[in-house]
Length: 189
Image (cartoon, rainbow, N blue to C red; front, side, top):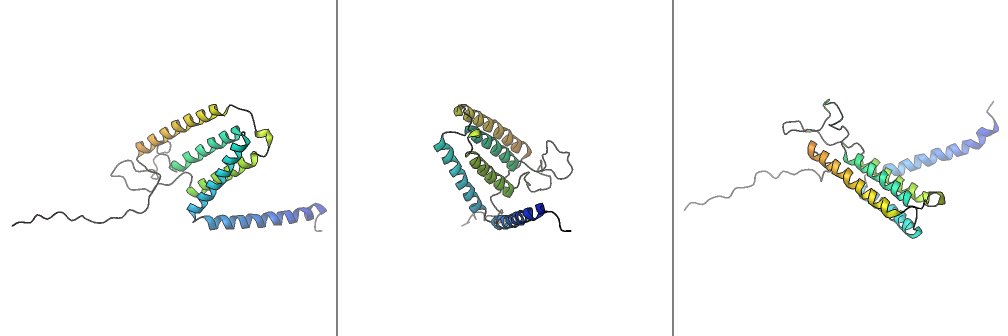
């Protein structure tokens, strides 16, 4: 016996969903090495969202929630995977002294997941602007001031953490060593 009539109607949807998921993952994997292009696309999505909120003159609560979420993602992006303050020193910590062995900086939230989460957040917030139930009337300057204060205090704490444990979450590229610089020779006459 093959099953009831309910299985026949859900099978095409499951097949379509599986195919869509596979195709989406394929394009997501292909976009991985194109960092600048990905971030420019996200900047475009963010600009479209900002223009929509500006022209609608509403959805400030959605924007505030988006800002808090983006701040949370930024903290995860700037933080080491193993926090020296919280974790027991088990060999996977950051070096704190000059004599300590070099350990590369490993983020708690990798760049690709950071980008993907930000892009999804802007898309979800954009979709939310089409539903009037999310347009709660608020006095937006208060929300903006509160978010700025929250951002400053959070970044101050994160920067102090970076200074205390001597790590920089960004790398500009591979260091190049040029060797010894020739010293000025003194000519004797």
